[in-house]
Image (cartoon, rainbow, N blue to C red; front, side, top):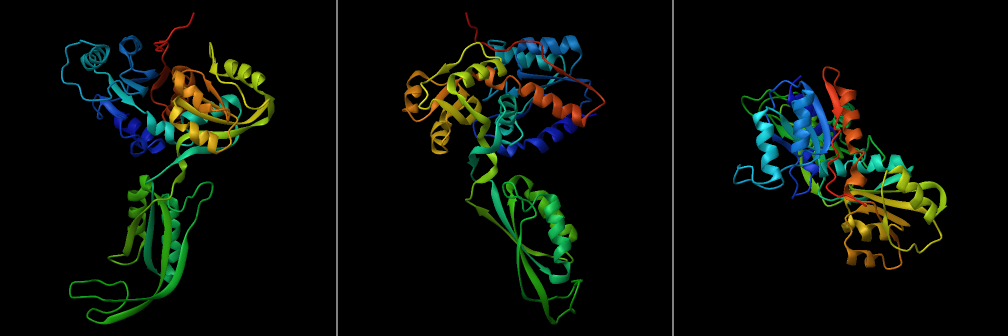
Length: 364
């Protein structure tokens, strides 16, 4: 089994096109063509994790956080980033990161948190813009269902919690096949009129190429007539954060006590709750302060995330309770999530969870 096959599996799940512009998800160190001996999954691929990979015979580390965010100009071992990269290269260990792209998929980081705390009726908190396209194709009426089904199977027509979505109108198309053409219908050098359907789909940008291949493979014409239009609509199936509801209302202090236990948190920094009882909960693994207004706008009672700064707590403004459980703590179960995905898809190598605590923050 090649590293490239593992990467393909991970990127089918969390396409790199979904990562933020500042991010550096993907293969950071290593050769895609190398055989996989075993995989070590971690949050942070620091030097101690590389040592662990060496000891356990793992030649691929899959981390949530990239060890390199921006370009390195020297490799002198001057800091922990350089030392990690140098050691990984010396020992032929590949490092792959699956970061904000995994944050943005509906069955990613926030899905795991929602499972842990028992959220139901889940939706993306801030759906992503610029991720939708509209495909319009003209196809002979009697071939419409075949093309329609192929596009659906390739990922077209999925809108929020619906699939097999499309729209068609019927009309008449004209064309003339010139010398050298091999028309499916009509004659060379003669104007032909064909009863055609105008078939339209909404398509996530991340599956555009596979939908286009399916369209071309099933369309009867030599040169199908189709076009793509970029949409400004938000894609409600991907994006930052998540919001859902508890099975029943709980007193806010009871909820925070349960949260501390379920998320294995040493302490929680929180603001006063504007309500005695809470039910609607917003979450964001990692640093989520940028989503506070989204959480307020969607009437969340509590917003759970990490890395709030002192003055940002004032922004709750009596409208919501902020519960800062810490960056590492909010994402610690992401390693389990990644490991499960790999074990479901590969049986030819071991998938191990790191035993190294990479949290740089300690508590007394």
